[in-house]
Length: 304
Image 1 (tube, one colour):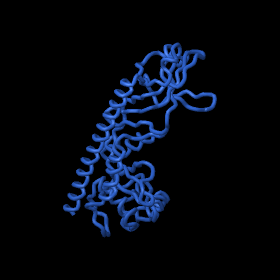
Image 2 (spheres, helix red, strand yellow):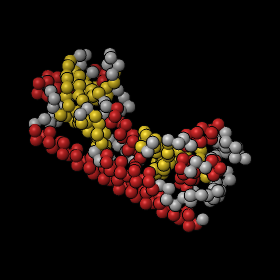
Image 3 (cartoon, helix red, strand yellow):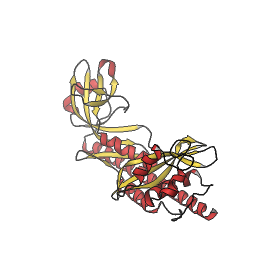
């Protein structure tokens, strides 16, 4: 059993190192592309430094279609036009002396995907925008469209043919593909009983493996929490556990372990990320699962 645990821990260490390297490579590629774009716009005369909205309104001909850094952005706040379209804004909202930018939801989807798969994608956003309109209303309003978004040192996403493209996306896809094909290393294929001394990470992986890969309910349900009403003390599945099993046991669906999430949890509660595959292709973004230490001292899956 010590050998099994050593193999699993070795696999975790290797996995974390691989994802760390991928995150660095994606960040490096993104920062290089961002700098290249800025240099290109400046060389071509398309670049404009940040000015107040009133300056753009007064000299719209000189700013139309030019590229300018969006002065600042808070993705938690927005204004809505009469058609219901949402725009992120920057400036003096009280008197409508502002810049507005219609945000592409696909960009946020990419950042969400990166954060769940690799972690640590929070930070200050930088946006390059193309000025498309400017007008005086109760104040001066400048409308821009997104050209690119960057979380410096993390990722860059640019718009190509009206669609967001992650710089370095192939690196992420390759890393996820490698993880999907190797994450079971170190887990015994035909266990009949769950060892009492499995740590939280082991429990998360065994849960996914014996549920999704082996579809062995007898072993799998030993990993479910009775304290959180997934199973009864005698191992009988309750509603929560039955729901988990229905999803895990679907024949067209696989689940694989992605990483531990060190940004949350506590000594007795650990979080991990897993990815769903449908018919062999990743579906959506990585999702969280939670493993807790029960009163018995054993780790069990609380939520999934």
